[in-house]
Length: 598
Image (tube, rainbow, N blue to C red):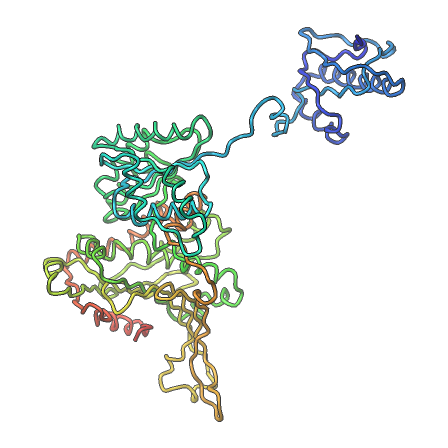
């Protein structure tokens, strides 16, 4: 047996293991020396001497061509002293691989972990719990959105979908309820049945009963069965009434959060009833969760229209320089909904259009539109700019607000006769900063209007000293340049410009350059819940309200809500299917704005 000469005996305190010679080129060897900087001077010297002698020994092997079977050098318990370099090296196998002290390896991941018997790390599992799983929102929106994400490959294969409710249901019962609302989109028919079965197989029900503390413990145990001992992430969608929100969230925080990954909490509207109630709710959440865990969701913010606000502005040089009071005369944000039972429940249930739509969707739309360019597209950078806009919005007066309530059909007249809750809201907002000083932002939103419309209209100033003024029709406002971002009825981006009418003579006309999405892109547009749920999975927060944004929004609306309550302001009645209260048109005229639908 060939033994290693004492002249090259390694320091035994260094833990050694064999690695291929090709893995350690001269440059890489420097890394190992640097990583040993924490050792004593003596050990470093011993190591250098040992490696030099080892290199001489290997040179002898190559020179004399000794051939023996390779053998592993054993780590000894005591430190061996090095001897003089003049001792003769004994024979050893020619293919012996260099032995690198393990203590000297840099603390980075390497492929040696698999060689030591460790399996490849498994991707983190994801568990999504829908609290309030048998409610209308969960059945019609949340579960279908989750299935669409699963079908499209945005959810991991080891995902677990949990429905939490107070009903005594089995897993199979919940699967039957969920399956009734799941469909594949037009462009997603391939293997639809297989994907549907796979999704349902990963769906489970938890009966929380009437004690959420015990129910959340049960949910946690069921999730742990899916997750095993690996890294695990969890999302909790709280689709519950306001009166149950605090009890559910506290029980969840104490009993259902994973300690092996991140936890994210999705909170549905309303985010309080006024500034005080919202503040108390926020403080309760922040006592149990970190701000980065909270995702306050408004499904209207998941529309492509909202994303197009920033894309159009910041990715097109033609628009960014125009985005200020210098060129923009006014901005109109319009949202009208069809009058359905869902709307009646929200608006006449002592909640109203202001708290439901204006507080979140309208103000968030204005904030995204009017904000300064953020440092980056990171969610926190965008939210930092949004909150500055909200804090700059001038306080509203009653003269700047119009309230309305639609006349219901004869068989449902009792729905509104005893209520002052508005179903229509129009207001003129001003942002008191250098970019938007003096520019009116007119908002109009309600139900039961002439048609379903969701759009933002940017009207520009008239051309100073317009050379073609005499060639323009008698109403110069009709020839105002206008940029329109529309979500409903047909998603589109429109630019209104003036052009010459073909033929002899010189007559001008206002025309629209249009991008109609249905003609340009032959795809089915994903539901807004899909967009927002994917943002939660990715940790993208820019479309979700942060606590300071929430506070700033309530500071705008709470004073006017108090004045409406104190003065017992009676909403103006308007016909269902009409254009809304006449007062809205007077409001526009008072601020020098002609509504786009005039």
